[in-house]
Image 1 (tube, rainbow, N blue to C red):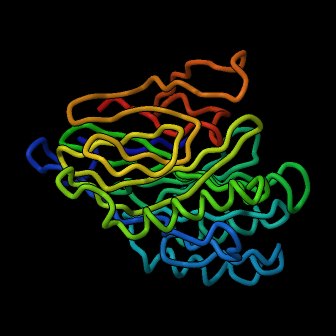
Image 2: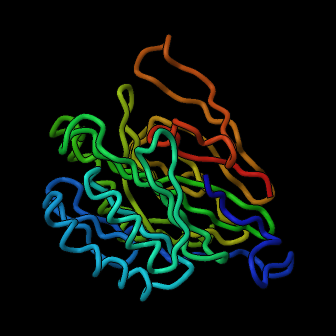
Length: 278
C-alpha cells in the first residue's frame, strides 16, 4: 500500500523548516443527528449509492480544487468502487488497494501530509460503514501519524451520544484549550469497535505542543487534553510514542499494541495514535 513521504522526500523540507502544519481535513460535525460528513472541503451526503454515483464527477473536480496537500475521504459503495477508482485515475491521482480489496488508498501528490483509507461496508449497504483518516504532522523533523474515525452505526446509548456531543462542542470552541501549549483544534471525531468507544481530537502541533488521549471527560488544565477515548498515549516535543495501551471494558482484553507507519495492516478502525520514525 502507499506510504506517506518521509521528511526528506517532501519538497522543500529541512530540519530548519520547523513544524509542517497541514490544513484541517475533517471539521467538527454534529455527531448526534448529522447527515453529512464534511471532509476535505466537500460534503459526503449519506444518501446511499445513487447519491455517490451522481457525485463522482463533482468529487474529482473538488479534489482538484483543494490541492495536493489534502487527501479526500469517502465511503465508497462497493458496486461503485470501480467507477470511483477509474474517475480518480483519469484525474491523475495515485490510488491503491488496501487489505482484501475492501479499501482504497488515494494520494494527491508528494507533498501530501494527509492520506486516507476508504473502508467499505462489509455487512450490507448500511452496516459497519467506517471512515478512517490518517494525519501526518511534522513537529520539527519528527513525523507523527494520527487517526480520526467515525463509525456511523455504532454510536451507542443516548448518554454516550450526549457526552460525545458535549466534547465536540467544547473542542470546536477552541477557547478552552490552553493557548500557551500552542494547540490549535482542527478536528473532533470518534470511532468504535466491538469493545471500546473512541473519540479522537486531532490537533495542529507547534514545536512544544503535545497530545494526550485517555478515557475521561473534558479537562482543561496545563498538562492534559482529554477526549472520550479508550486509548491512551502522549506525544511531546522530541519524543516518539509507538506503544499504546488499549483500555478495554474487560480486563482480559487489555493489551499493548505496537504499530508503525509500515504496520497498519488490518487494525485500521481501532488504532488511534501512531508514532512513526522520522
